[in-house]
Length: 179
Image (cartoon, rainbow, N blue to C red):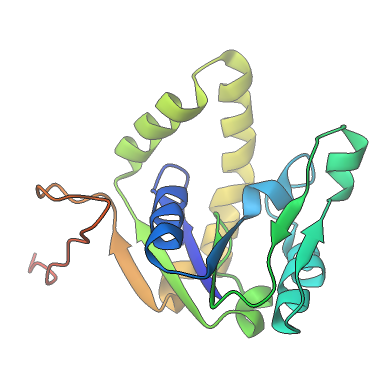
């Protein structure tokens, strides 16, 4: 059970999808699906009770959050039993209440201006989206300051590299630079 955390636009979903593709018998859980129409960050107990605990017991997961039912969102969150790796990706996954359920964690550090640009490309820049982002930041910043996930991360990934590589088959690793 490996958490992939970072701020919006850091590349969490992309990394999780690439890892799932590269690592046989693995699956991805997107915390955005847990949080959808529920809460920006107050979803830890829902994740533990309905996904992490069953997976730790070796059970399959087929979970339909209450907000999905209330808002008629089709489908459910499905994770097969017996997966060797579960990538739990989303902002807020490296937190105190989830620590007992995680085996490792990755913090994706990025350039905030670039992350904002990528988020705008991905999510749009409508007035509604700008309001959503403003409300998100009101909760995200205090959450990050309180939890400091980068301090507890097993590994820190420094955002998208600016070195030519094949992102589907290569990971760029470089030593820290001296300031």
